[in-house]
Amino acid sequence: MEENYFLLTVVMLIIFIASLISYYDSNSASNYIMTGEFCTDFSAAFPGCGCSAEDSKIYEFKVNISNALVATHTIENYYISLNQSCTNPECFELGNGFYNCFCKDFAGTLRSNGEYYRTECGV
Image (cartoon, rainbow, N blue to C red):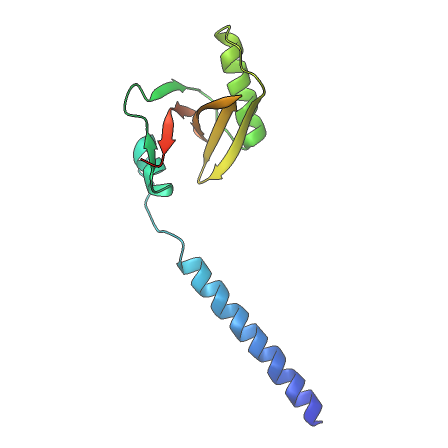
């Protein structure tokens, strides 16, 4: 009988610790308000990053980007429409609706609402 109480106490302790970790982990996320302005939101979501100083807006697509595959396809079609080469187009999800896209080298950051900007980090 005492073994059952000990086991129950251990299980309750584990659940309590897991709950505390979950609570503090969810509260540690930065709480910033999305303004809808690309450069402001990008800088708030990714401290140390922002829009490039000169001519930062590349294009505004009239499509919602739902995942990295759609982002990659959008960027590939964009460069094809410009008759420019885009070697191995690929986009990676950064989170918060942002995707970093590459055409061999870094090309820019695409937002889920279709805004495409030149960005840089470490500034």
